[in-house]
Image (cartoon, rainbow, N blue to C red; front, side):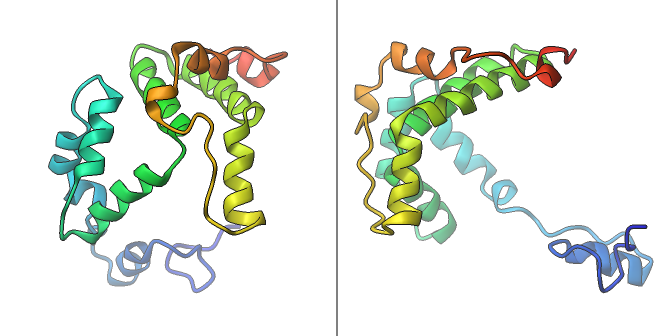
Length: 165
């Protein structure tokens, strides 16, 4: 049997559940940082052009540490990850959940097949120099063919996903 949420052995990370079960009241969870910054995030992410969005994130100067960290993380991250995430975000709103799972499956195999995934692991976990050499090095270097190669089918679809409706 699973422990009750208020039990000392219950999974951590949701303190409001422990409080709710102890007090008998419906305590509200804390406000999320995403919810708190929702309008600013929408303004930064507006539009269909990833280069415009990237320029807004690069130019962001704010006293808000959470927002500045998010922008800095984007700027330092792999351009391929940003471009592929943006492409997935654009595509999935027209898809069923089963289609989204299948596309994510192909995308995950595509990420593993290209060098940036291994380069990120090298820079953070192996050499720990935190100085990845991304290829392509900039968003401007990413082509539609590069995106499509990451999202193409590779081998057989996992049966659990192939049969998902």
